[in-house]
Image (tube, rainbow, N blue to C red):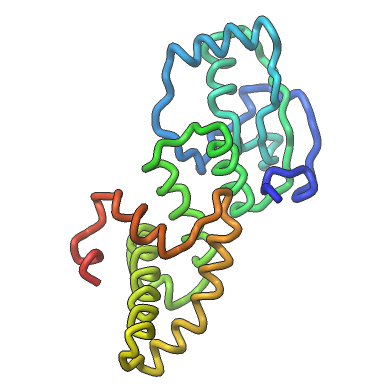
Length: 213
């Protein structure tokens, strides 16, 4: 079931002053085509906003944008509208991140690199409370790469029939199931081994020391 399904979180609809909406900290998209934003603004003025943006309530009557930044930008920059229809969702940080990723993915708004970066951030948040995980790298990219590389190394050793130390067995037993569950429940489910071998490699800014770990 998609994370954006109405049954997954409490929500309501309301017209909101666009000045009370703060940017999304989970926006993975880095580039917005101004010509397309202008066209979208014209379309909204002519036909109305077909799909509401998604926000969550904040303190002092403000709201944080979760999904719909193109629509919000188009209205702010290319229309005279002061209010926008919004779906107000009562969600935590992880749910907000998932909703943002799912919305962008369904609309094909993310490049391959942006999609990979979004996946990394979701994994990092899911794993973020684990003490060992937090020690394996300074950035989400380093931590996710080190975790998956370690699990893959242990997996390969088992397949070859090589000796696997007790500590490595414990690590595998503790994290493999958790990692598989995270990847299974991503907006775009995939195998963690495939993500390690075919997706993470596209991020050329992985430090060489991490690649060799």
